Image 1 (tube, rainbow, N blue to C red):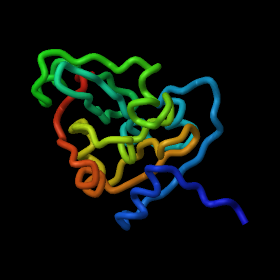
Image 2 (image 1 turned 120 degrees about the vertical axis):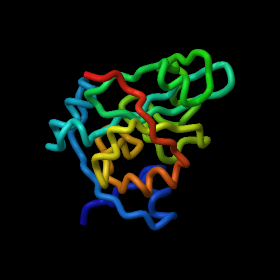
Image 3 (image 1 turned 45 degrees about the vertical axis):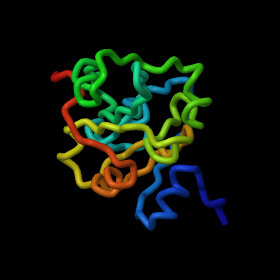
Image 4 (image 1 turned 90 degrees about the vertical axis):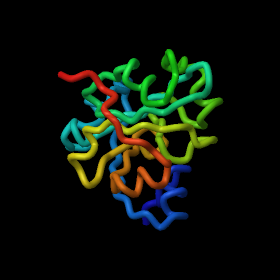
Length: 159
């Protein structure tokens, strides 16, 4: 019998009785989201990456499609900061409990203000990291928004 996969993010979903589907893939040196989407055979538009930022007032989380680029000005406006910067990778694990390539918007050490890009609204379910490299989870967008108290807003550059 295969060992059941459990991460902080998946435990949190279980606690709240939120259904999800797990996708696993072989971890390689290529950590980009497009590679991950290809490995789990899902459309890029439905697979989202989690970015952690810092401003003068707080830390913030942006959840955007893997093929998109974060618009820092739009994100700053949504959270009420003058300027935001990506959190240095070296600080990621200490702040969130997650490492690069395995950062989930669910189950961080602390719940930070989170914004999910508006493009997510075209899907009933989106796919995000399950909190470990090699594991993604597909979850209801509305359940995710409620669980992490997220806002939905256009925060990526238009193609």
